[in-house]
Image (tube, rainbow, N blue to C red):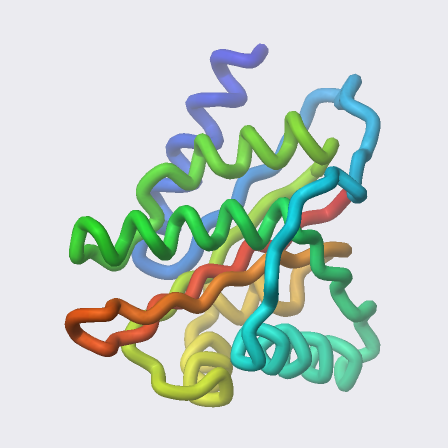
Length: 167
């Protein structure tokens, strides 16, 4: 069953690589939800603004606001740093990130949005809302979020990664 689940998650990741990424667990999880994993993360004003924009949009539709989790933001930061170091914009390693979050936090569902070269959180949010796959993640059945926005010191371009989870 795990092999089939892994294949399904890998296929899903490949299909959504250009739009967004998501992963679901269909097995009953034996991992207890641990939303308070002790990890430090310092949020920038842009990161907090992006979370607020996402939550304001969700609430305007009658959906729950998402709670930020530092552990997920650290995973988002790792991915931003990977994209900057490799000069790419992609979802490489999403399956590993999602499996780690499932195992560590007991998440049932994990999805990811990325963005590149948007100067403001509002510009990134507008682009995500204009993309069906990204918008689906923003309005999805999630409970928690992690986010990172990092700037390439050489080019000045911003990289955004946010990860949505249902715990």
